Image 1 (tube, helix red, strand yellow):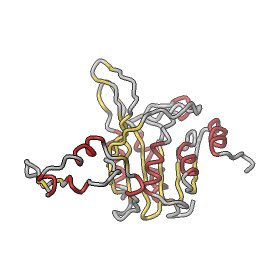
Image 2 (cartoon, one colour; image 1 turned 90 degrees about the vertical axis):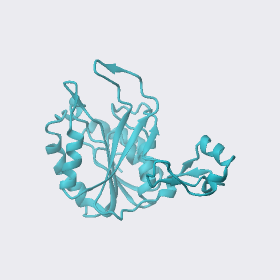
Image 3 (cartoon, rainbow, N blue to C red; image 1 turned 90 degrees about the horizontal axis):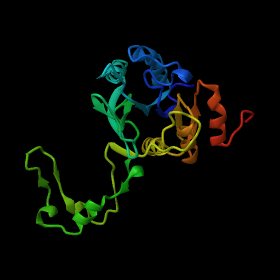
Length: 254
């Protein structure tokens, strides 16, 4: 791919020691070594104002959380990336569970990296409906709500609830509450359409180019197509190609 041609990379590579039958199962001790050459290429093709979104999950080894996710963050920073956000994907419909020394994770990291601080970002395109509690509070404003009420702890953070009057939508936080349901698409680790949908709308405009270098079942590509973005996907496992083509409405001959 040409240098600086991609506006957004959204991807979820095989997690450490996962998908051994399909992707080989990279050891967490070797994960950074395996990932860095790929990150070098991502940096080459990414537009200077583009964004790299990496969905990845921690791994527990011998009862202790392995540091490979933290190691990736540090290695990418050493490579010249800016670690600009740690979005949390909170899974709304995760099944409860436990192990002898811990409970089941109901979240995953969605790491954001950029090469410049003035990256393209379209925050108004991802506004969400205001919470019922916010709407109710605005309906019964008091004197303190009409001024910027400073925090009791003198933290420097304050709020002025009156600014919410008439607003039906608000900006989201960096915790994304999304169900894991993604339909039976024939892939063991497909993420929900809502995940790439959020980031594609936040970091691109129609006609921009979206890349998923671990395309899997093609969810990122399908969402990009639906939102009017150009897209490129790379998938190592040939058995998923027919699934991707079907979801995109294309054929190998196209």
